[in-house]
Image (cartoon, rainbow, N blue to C red; front, top):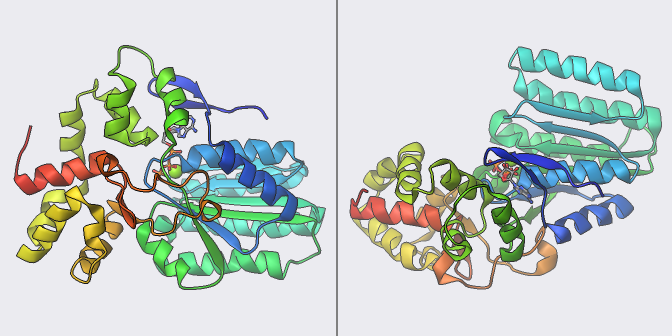
Length: 337
Ligand SMILES: Nc1ncnc2c1ncn2[C@@H]1O[C@H](COP(=O)(O)OP(=O)(O)OP(=O)(O)O)[C@@H](O)[C@H]1O
Ligand SMILES: [Mg+2]
């Protein structure tokens, strides 16, 4: 498989690791997906990079592939039928020009249907990050429509793969209420894979152990640290401001603040009767994740380590990254760099 190249830290890096996750795509290529696979994981953990590498893999395995990334306004069409490809790209460009991004998601769906009719072959539809744009209720309908494509296709087909990815806790929950999708979590990168990415970052940099402790294997945080000249305080300060962490903390009751302070030391403090309403808020703000079940087959790629207090990973709940936790800790203490 050709490894794709990605823009990262002012340079081009080669896609690294995620071997298990790519193996799972190979499995889907053999068996098809049923129901729709909804992949859910921390912001910046590498979902898009993995999906783009998967486009390459599926293309090599003889699939026609539709990939859309709604917030990035990015569309890939690896079709054997060139007419349909140019029609799709023209319509997609129009939708993007009109900022009709919800329309773009449905266009991908319509094109998948056309592809089934015309090729009856191997088709993959990959929808990256649509849920935030089309809203919670419509996301559930969209997933249902993708399932209908598998169950009630316009023609018989050889194989269909449908994958949707999101970092949004809210839409994950709404979709989880139905049986239309299998929700598969993905975690930050495993240590040795992350090291391969770290090694490709140019210039002077802190030692790997320090970077691992700050990022917990999250490539987006790695890139942010690089861009801030490895000034951790600056990244944390930007995080607190950008996420409205102060507003969150001011909105909490005294007892919620106490639970939050406990959560900094042990995220499982949220998995209590007192903690659950706060956990819902923190999930909604993309700060923590419910990671109760570690069975490897339930995860895309490797599940998080069993319990790692240093990285903010509990048995049932985890901070998305150690830096998320550090931002909360500082905001709670009113300590600012
Ligand atoms: N396996 C990898 N090899 C090389 N670069 C990677 C890998 N995974 C992620 N990256 C890079 O790290 C950055 C963040 O990853 P990416 O955008 O894929 O995360 P994401 O989970 O899609 O984030 P979001 O939740 O914001 O959509 C990107 O610049 C991406 O190219
Ligand atoms: Mg993404």
